Image (cartoon, rainbow, N blue to C red; front, side, top):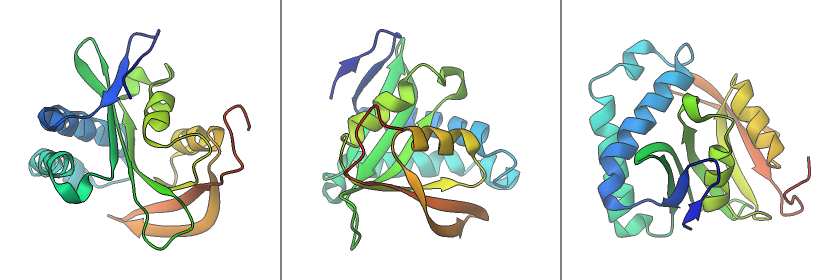
Length: 174
């Protein structure tokens, strides 16, 4: 999974010792992305960072998550992105993309695409939930073969739509 990019970032498998940095990056990304969609109370909660750190430590160390694919992107020794995909229960997709976040400063350099490719293989059927509205993320996923399937849900008072990718999609298609 190690992939050095000419744009100056590295994508690699996440390690247990990354949990704290992953949590910090994850929270910062949520604050950038979801301000105005999620409550400030949630985004600024002093409990958010420890909860994310506990989450990532669990994902990276407990056997029940060993089937998950977790990758990080780093630039100059700092984490700038994180992605996680894993098993799907009772659905027609082979994998579910649970997490894909890149700090806003690093948008547009291929970090998101490299992270997506690290955890979801091209041609692999997949599903994900994305905030709605979140036009930038939705456009990114459409570019990578995901389309809304008409299913929505509300979590933490945020409307989300499900997007899915069939096995017929291949890189280069739009």
